[in-house]
Image (cartoon, rainbow, N blue to C red):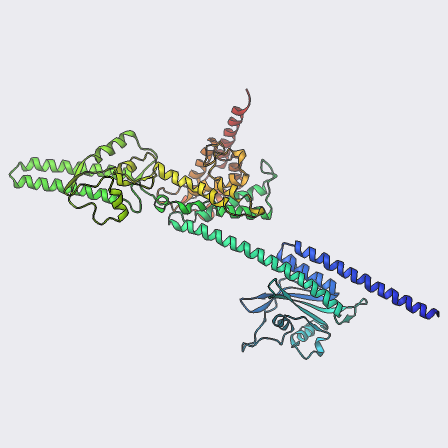
Length: 597
């Protein structure tokens, strides 16, 4: 065999081997790119990786990734790269993409098949153009204008639509100017086209997965925000609580993450843990959907849906008129007018004093003495005459409750205040004397239990939710914010070491929000200093985490929150060092008591 033939065969064999190696390299790169794209979680980073991998696989000088904007019915530039022009927009680049949208429809409403990218999106097919300047199928006037301004020569174009799992086009990948091994611009070969199409298919799936994950997260966020908003809207007096508690909790968590010394120096949260805290914070009171509004809004002891002090006042009015009538009857019958007037004035004064006392008791306070309770019962034992039927105008449920002891027909003598059988409804006691004798605040024992039960309901609701692995701690964080460090909290009686740091943070946030809130009907908002002082008492009583309390103050969480959420008149000076000293002394005392003798 001639040597020239041998050389030709050898060259052909080498070329075949080279092509095979190149195919293997392309296949390997395609597989690696697919794995990398599937693992990528950052949206901007993913888009950049897609474009760079496509450029490398297609040996392209430049490329652009467009995403479909369904609201605008247009393609939006997401990321752009061009090596010759050192042009980088979008993705990790500092410069955002500033080009206008590519509309999928013409001004007259017809589909826009003039632009190569919109044509690929509308048709769903790949478009491979060897030379844009000789193409008559598409309008490249904008490309020529760009080239004139930059000195660039746009030639070969490979435009590939990106399809999601349902086959819908979600974007377009476009490569510009394929380069051969010598750096000359050449058309995109059929082999390269197939490879980039395969990459584009994987890229579309990766983008679609991210979109679906983001949509699920957005849906969950919307649901928890709606639930939190519904709970706040349930009562006009707690609106904003489910929004403010997350704000404080995140401030404390941020301070813990930034701590460089102390117990929380090593504390940190991943992106997933931050989101877990976000979800837990907004769901921390979801059980309040079962708490009756009248309990949440109970500003006075006699309040149910309205303040029943008005009924009591009407009875006092009746007694006053009875005294007035008795006076005139005595005068009309020839009795001693001076004595009758003195009796009337004494009765007026007594009624005025007794009602003022009852009205004051209705407001509630920090403590009610046994003597005051006895006076309520004594006043309540006075009688008045009812002259109208007490069963008229009642609902059928109210009538059923009266069967235990139907009221006598009018005229009937009744006590001024009473605890009647029909006051007991569904485990609650609405008795007037019973409620007026509440020793602290305005909430009766069974009402307090119902309020406390909201956390049990919260835990039950959260336990039924199929949280994914990265949200598994949501029930613990949200459900334990009423626990205390010493184990006297509720509902589980957990001690501090049995609670996660995030649950302990939320416990402080919940108390601080309640103290400073200006929308509660049963109390005036406390100042910043008053609120911090109460927190310091809770530290001394071993109810809240002393380390977090110190962090709360040293990081200035209290002042940061105050600037945004408190009224100007609530913001006063806080002696941080004094409170820190007290907290450290309290902790040292507990440590000394706990040490073995």
